[in-house]
Structures are given as structure tokens and as C-alpha cells.
Image (cartoon, rainbow, N blue to C red; front, side):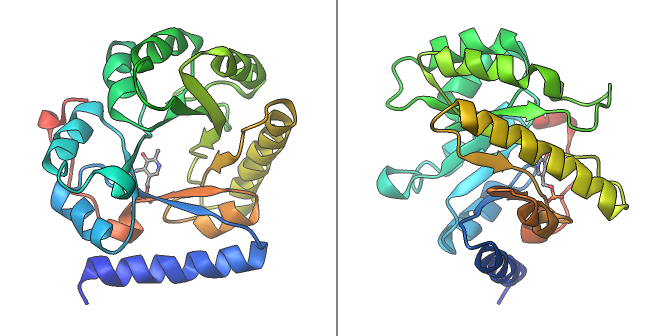
Length: 237
Ligand SMILES: *Cc1c(COP(=O)(O)O)cnc(C)c1O
């Protein structure tokens, strides 16, 4: 077995154990940023269908390379998980199935408008800056309810839940606190909106902790693909 297959199986085993412990499903998003299309193809052949990309242009290039497999019932589910610039809203709306990084009102109208004509609405997660760090992307926890209402009203968007990237502090209790805060926001959102079913949190280093605290989707990159090649300036964010 090569690295990719071993890694996929090992993550699969750990996820299965976490699901069994929680008695519920948890989805795996394979984070393929900076990895070549061939790496996605290898995971696809092992059965993975949901992939997360951070940069719009990089993702579109890989989508072109993988067009032959990305069809019909076996199509890849593409998630944009990186920060979205307003001038990329059109491409994001047209080239992805999910946007996990909606963090401001300004994106809602153009995303919905450019999604018109697609067979399905764009699934949207609101990204929350759960650590209240000024430097990070994501909206403040206080504005989630208002943003969510606006997303839910947008014709071609479908509100699915929340996403967070808690600060990767070594202190497990601090991480747990951030995950719990997200869980509370998620529960409040679910109480208000039918169709909200996704809490995306947890990465290679902490996905089991995130699941124990309520994650329904984990985003795993390096533990599946190995260390990332350094991004080159040609990535065209
Ligand atoms: C890179 C990235 C991940 C995956 O991180 P790993 O630590 O490699 O698992 C998950 N979510 C987001 C938003 C990312 O940018």
C-alpha cells in the first residue's frame, strides 16, 4: 500500500471509531489545497468524494483536470474553505457545491445572483472567528444569527451550518472551549433554521476532540495527503 491508501484507511478507522462512540455520522472532507490533481484522483479511487480547496483558481484548474471522473452520481463535491474575496464571488458560486467561509453580508447577494441557473443552490456555512482574534477571518459570534437569516433568505443559497478554525493552541482545554462555543452557536442556529445540519470543525491534529464536542464534518489535509508542498506565488488566490 502506498502512503495515500494507508493514510486513508487509518483516518477511516479512527473516524469509524469516533462515529461509533457518538452514535452518529460524521463526514470527512479531504483538504487537497496545494496538492496536485493526481493526489485527489488517488483518494477518489479509494472512495472519497468530498474535497476542500482554499484557493478558487487552484481549484478550478484541478476541476478541469479531473472533469472525466467528476460526473453524474460519482461527481466530486467541491468545498471552498479558504477566505473569499468579493471579486471571486462569481467563480465561487459557479465552481463549488459548498462555501464554508462566508463571513460577511457583502458576499451574500453576489453569491446568490451568480448561483442562479445552477441545478442546486450553493450550500453555505458561516465561518465564525471563535477565538475573537482580530487577525483571523470569520465573523464575530455576535453576528452569526443576523448573517444566517440573510443567507437563509437568499434565493440560490442554502444555509447548512457553521465552520470554524480554532487557534491551534497546544492546550487541549482551550481548544475544547472553542469547540464548545461553536457547538452552542450551532445548537442555537439549528433551533431557528430547519435544514441546518453541519458543524464543520476539527483538522488533522484535533478531529477526534472536535467530534467529541459535536463536529458533524471534519476537514483533514496533512494526515491524508502528507505534508503540503509549499504554496507557490502562481497559485493565484
Ligand atoms: C488546510 C486546512 C485544513 C486542513 O488542515 P490539516 O491540518 O492539514 O488537516 C482544514 N481547514 C482549513 C480551512 C484549512 O485551510
